[in-house]
Length: 168
Ligand SMILES: [Zn+2]
Image (cartoon, rainbow, N blue to C red; front, side, top):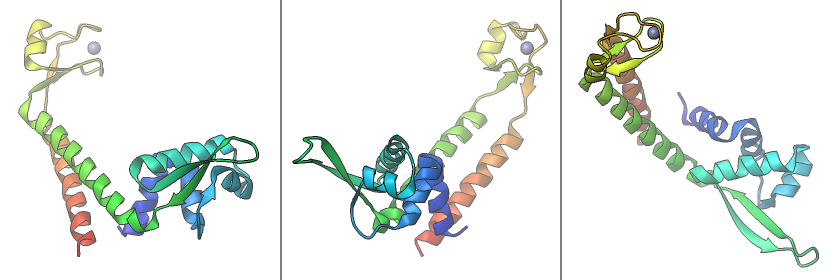
């Protein structure tokens, strides 16, 4: 996948469609949330929500000024287009380490599950339950997590490939 595509995916995930629209605007200079709301015909609260979500991941930044006439605080926003690759890389690394943790817990613990989807417990917990589901009473079965682990490994590999491409 291209990094442009990944960036859009990331923005949509954190800031929704409104975030994506603002990002695609490519405003030449700073703007206030009010200006964007008027220009796009989107509720100002939705614009703010999206901008703060972008700020959380480091794609947007703001400064606050008091409007001399109204005395209200105004937010002046700017989109950090030049930081988008760094932000993307950071997010990918974060996702990768989460996946690695998940893989670790999948492969280091034996799980027992209720076939009706009620519980997923460790061996010790299953012992305490006498290997019976506390909700429906069926016998808990050993959960083969090799397929899940393989899937996680695949995802990690994909992310590693993306990171390699980005650094080339
Ligand atoms: Zn059950």
